[in-house]
Image: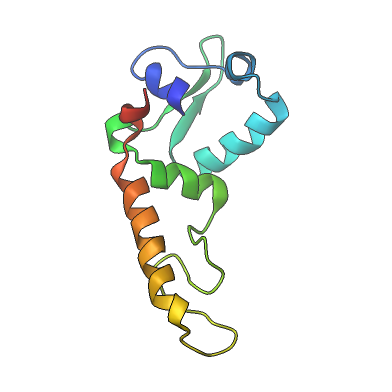
Length: 120
């Protein structure tokens, strides 16, 4: 995503060039880009000038969106959902729950506050 941000408004970027520059498997990148495209964070074009580009300006994409697209539900704790709703299999409110809700909120807020353009 950082390479796409660096090329925003210029040329499309091929997966092959990203794989080469970042030393990442092309097959692995293909799987990641399917997820990013599904979440409408990137667009693709075919043809001689084809490749991938960001669907929005880097200043309009936050890290939370990217991580969520690639990882799914943004809940690091099994007993909470992304919004902080508690799903405890023991049907309890243990002392740790309130702390976990705060930690999860801080993580998600921090990721939402970091824009892609800040990583360039």
